[in-house]
Image (cartoon, rainbow, N blue to C red; front, side, top):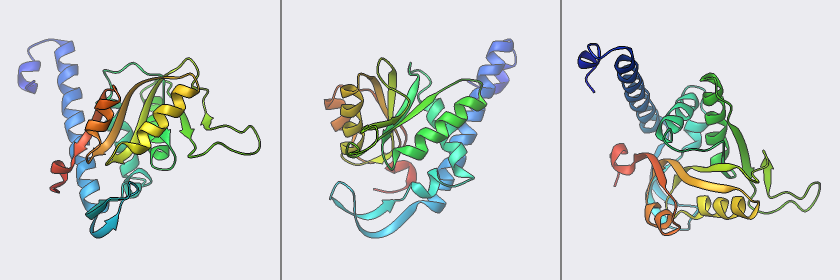
Length: 201
């Protein structure tokens, strides 16, 4: 929608146009932050065991005071059409993503709970696999910073379902190869960026 056209379309059209402009600005700003701070070149072994000539270290983004608020805004915007009331994923990559969304949602006047899926169930205390909000009976969005094989988010999906939660979708900041695995699991998959956006291949 062109902003000029929206100005002749009434208050609702103007609000929609301004929202679109805001989303575009935030998306571009976060993309530049990722390019500047998170892309590492050189031989690396990914958590999936695969080797790559470059690595996207998104913890440099999700734990950055300038970039993390942008993550929360963009992940909320990207998943705006989904109906969910809690967000989380497999520790560690998902934790700051979910937290940034929690805070961004609160800034917009909406309550969003978060949860953390442990890689293994605790052997002491409450012996929980999932920390934070109780996901039983909740509509849950599983998130991750980036995914190559889908292994981490799908591990979280399994844990959430075992705990009685309903997984509505999986969402990532950067998609780098997990789309087919998520699709095979029968889940909607939302990505803010692909590797092409980062000028990587």
